[in-house]
Length: 232
Image (cartoon, rainbow, N blue to C red; front, side, top):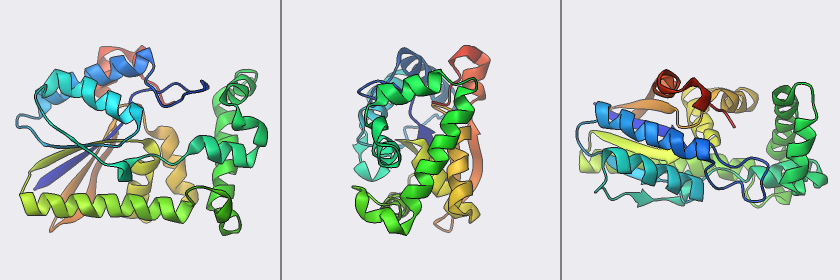
């Protein structure tokens, strides 16, 4: 039975001009992830990374701990949606990430406030009336992710590889899980809030069809350093 490990990247730089870069926490998380894979994966798997910088950094740091000589594929189909554009189309002032971060910081319950903004921004993005206002509409993003997964399943079937690791993002993982569990859009994106940085979601291929085996495994981070457990 073939196993696919979907890994969310390490903590990025939320609220900074360049979000697409690991924070110090993110680098530490990626290192612990690699140490975990060294204990649990004995043979080198097929390895794929999204093309974003945070994907690449997480991949390289983790592989340095478990498969330092391994080559990996870079595939932009596994990239995250443009969350900064989605926020700014919902509220133009959020074109500056620092303003969003400051507004969240001023709230009594920052996480709840961010979740509310995110939900409303996603609602607008997934509304067909506004698809033309985004560089990548919801339906195009969803289709891209589904194609990425199907391509991977075909490659695994053709190569007979037993394991694959994909370094990607929470939105991508949520879409895949949502499809497998037949969730609606709202419930699909609600998953994003539960997916921890560098957590592992595992799929098993049965007759070349992906099945959800486990989701959001992050005990390996919590057991080493609970303070490193993050969701943003």
